Length: 515
Image 1 (cartoon, rainbow, N blue to C red):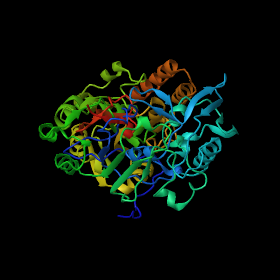
Image 2 (cartoon, rainbow, N blue to C red; image 1 turned 90 degrees about the vertical axis):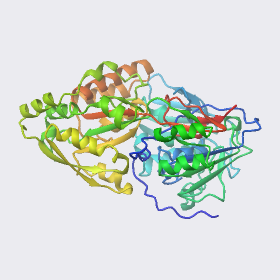
Image 3 (spheres, rainbow, N blue to C red; image 1 turned 90 degrees about the horizontal axis):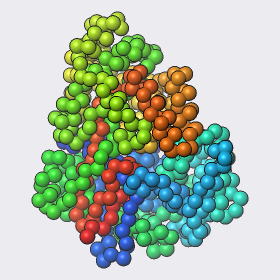
């Protein structure tokens, strides 16, 4: 079967998490790292179900959502993040910052080859990074701190920075850190069938948008890290259909909705539930009140935070597969502060009082975008806000228009499900003026100072403390109204899921051979 052209859009920002339905709030992200010995006789095939289709395999257009299950098998990244959330060498076997933090030097592993047989060298890394830096796409902004890229010899890459960037190493472990083939990466064919340096190549039986069959390269430099000779990634948007495929033996790894877990266990599947991998967040975007005046008053934003019975939502709506929260930062990160969870107890009466003090005793109305992945939440959010006097109207938004709706400045409040990431990426997405979850470009002098301090800190412990201050500001000033952290359940048979939630990057290195 030959590949057909995909009609999927190519949004400017990173991919949305997997679609969430009333039946299952699952399969948002997965963890990276880990491996087993490829010499095992059972190390043959991983057949995996995901819910979202890769938008493109062009290095400058890659998205970091579930699409990464496919492209991270086709491309090497300079670094990678393991199952414990720790940065490790990959294509770059070592790295070092200068004393002032403005020069990053990477030494490449020798002997790497592209799937075409061409040599992977510093010139290829330089060409890929420079193209990503100058090409509008989902990764361009992540390399904004890079002033220039140099390749003084075949195995050395030097990045000169405009300012210190504490998130750069993590960036180089994701899509912005891939290595493309300079001879082909600008070709139109690359979007569907790239020449990469990764452990797998796309098989001819792949069907764009439906099934991606990956065959392991015999000449790959780090083949022992990838135990599966063949990986099949099937796009199955409906979790019920995915569960049916598991029970029918069509796949051996996939999402396990709570209501189907017992059947899957009875069929011999192991159910794994990592800790939080995403956050359900009501973005209070119009913090200056330019479109919806009430949101310009911090008391209104605080009132909204007090409208939600987060514990009840987590236990009843989310079937216990969630953790109540008022924070957007990963609870496994140093930026997370347990003490902040006491900031907004469920108190509709107090919320109404705050609205009255702000000059809105009768409340107000708001129109919000309704996405496929927010359907399960919409009735609950509508009722909670209605109980304090805020009337919500939902405007359905097609999946292909999700990002454009968020960034349009049409919607002052946005319910969103965001995959958890590093503190630097979460702060960038939510609180910098250019973050895609800050569509009204909100800023505050105190927050700007805190962000600069945090992002410029190269010491991990000090950076964590700095991001904790960013988190404290955001929660106390109610820039958002998060509701709950979400976890995903994986069902596996003959393979094992290795993730625990420490790393939320979607990669087949999250799976190994069982037994």
